[in-house]
Image (cartoon, rainbow, N blue to C red):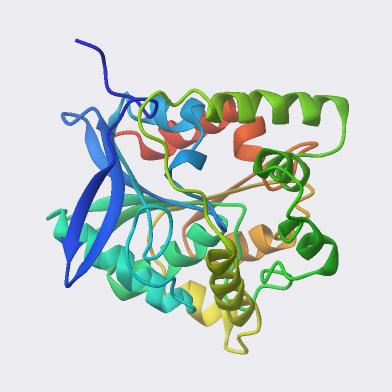
Length: 284
């Protein structure tokens, strides 16, 4: 019998209050607590790196979640992070999961923080990669040089990922090619790419998150969970300084910054990233 991985896992659906959430679930059901994976800006189920999620699935179940209005999930794309987090919590409840880990990448890291605050008993540990606290400088990702790439209708999606996630160095672009190659290995039904309406709504939510004027340290101080914070040393999308702010404000955080890398450091250093996440989650 062929083992289920990200390449062949079927897309399933959870129906909640008239909405249908798309997700993929695979991995070791006899292992530790499941990991709910929350995706980046305009990311779909197909954008999770097999080198990461398949390796983590050897230890525990991995559940890739697609928020409302994205990909094959129904409904409208939320325009606030709080609404996105609420959808994620409804989904977790629909699967009757009492305790989870969360891996939030970029935008997904925003949701992870709000979920941990709203439902602390639900969450055991958090991995927040390439992300920022609410009020984080530059976390809105609305700078002109970034918008020019997002809105370029002629640039292939994978080329956008290469430019945004990886440095323009020989090693960085080699890692970019390897990453997009891994994304193409899915053999089962592929997801629906995110359209302009997804980008518009998510950017609105991210800009509002970045422009928050509350007490960042007070909010982060309310997250007592163990948190692994990771990023590259030169993230051009959500500036790396935000990862330092997370690590400084969270009471129980570990920070790892990968060298010569950017927003996609977890993909560029997939083997090391998996080893670090596994160690962080060991026994939980």
